[in-house]
Length: 80
Length: 240
Image (cartoon, rainbow over all chains, first blue to last red; front, side, top):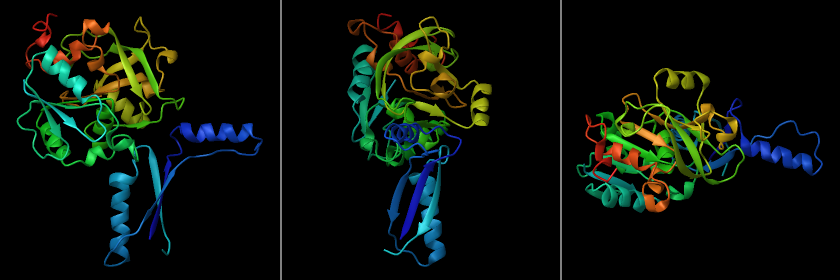
């Protein structure tokens, strides 16, 4: 199973992350340098082999799961 | 001009646009369900505001892959008119018919207020009732209208003159306080290189009749159905 992690790109302002950062500061977590708020997706799929699965997930990310203009994604493979 | 308004699950400004195009501007207008694959000969296609697919994932991202969008893309590619309002603008970005992306509003709030827009182009058919520098008052109602793209892409957009509307104050000045959602370069609306695809966050259909206290948006919709060479468009016919 693929676990897809999508985060706002480093150079893109992340208003949600900023708000969470501020909230953490307000409740006493002083050491927080930065929060980026992202999304994660678990993708269970059938494929011929590892290469085909990797390609399929990569296409999913580029076409729908992430918006490459403002988001970066990473894919991890985990056992179901 | 035959007009088609695409209806997605969650569209909620479709009837408002229908009312202005059909009842105010006297145009033949039809609804097009998002599962359809034909535009039924419509010359103007409107992607209306609302919350298509509940704004799941990113606003407009699911609608961008609806069956009808292939036909909308073909229509746009051959120079057909496509107007995206609010959620419809978000769809145009997600389909790549217009460049850039939307982030959550800078202050994370859903904004439902009147704003002022400065007209940046008057050579587009959509703007044929306006002049550059005109200031329009229109309502916005969105949570994800904070326009962004890379610096290079923004420069390119400016260089090609694709910025059509910017958030400004009532006198047309670009004040940071007038750019409520935090959009890069105060961008409120853009067009494609051909000028036939226009997307904007404000709602012209909500300010197109005197009865509503504001008809600044009527000129835009009248322009959208104007003949390619007609500068005044249907606005005169509507009692302009």
